[in-house]
Length: 144
Image (cartoon, rainbow, N blue to C red):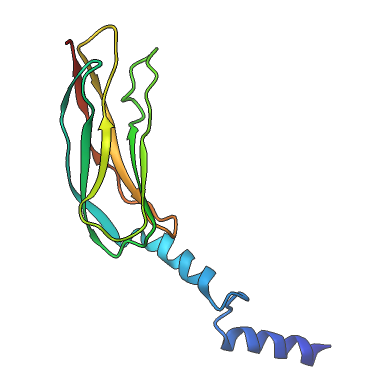
């Protein structure tokens, strides 16, 4: 019994204690601990929208080793959606590497009480579920 247990432990040490997936899970854990290998460098978007007016595009420039398909999320910050408002979080998936990643008609508003400032941010989520640091992208909603 001891010989089998010692042999199994030596085998695990020699293999780097990899899972049955050939070490992919270990690599993913190391990547999560190290953080994303990509980041958002700039975001171009209209920082003012007219309530009920045209929607604006969001253009996200990035750098690094982003895995595809990747998803861009334009979401309210923790305090960016005023009370009683229904804020949305538009998303767009990109199957191939593009730079910039362009979300069409992502920035818009409809409010009965303009002007309102909405605190929004952009994140990119890679195919491996690694998320970039948020990039601030607030906008003002004004009266028509």
